[in-house]
Length: 160
Image (cartoon, rainbow, N blue to C red; front, side, top):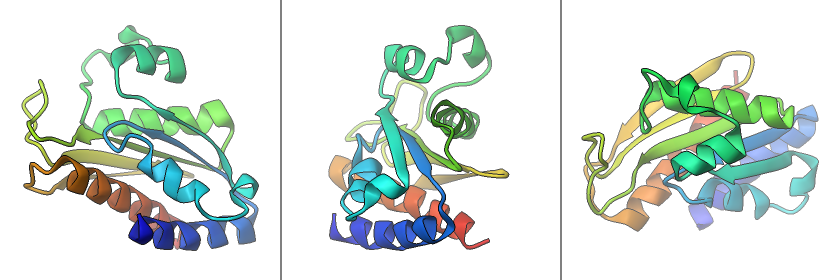
């Protein structure tokens, strides 16, 4: 968690300086991104909220994304990560939306993705998406790697 908090401190400093906000929708990281951002004192100045969108019901209820909107899109994909980041940004009225969706392990998911597969997105003026393949079956290591990658993507976009 220490490494994640170090990244979060950099994100927090930039967001506070710019008077900007962030909201997070995460799946296989289980709240690690949010926990790291909230571990920084003064988080209420930039952190608006988050959702752990781990199931279809969570997607419908927390994100207000109906099944119809998912036609042609599957979980743990770049299009889904993009949709989540943009929707969480809209729902909270945040400057930035961050999302993560993947297969932490120890096995892959029902869509054919191996453990260690995750897609992350950051929605701001534009939406940037990336995919990470760790090649690991270690659930906790993958969760940490996914969170760090998503947070580093946000940090990179803040630097543009």
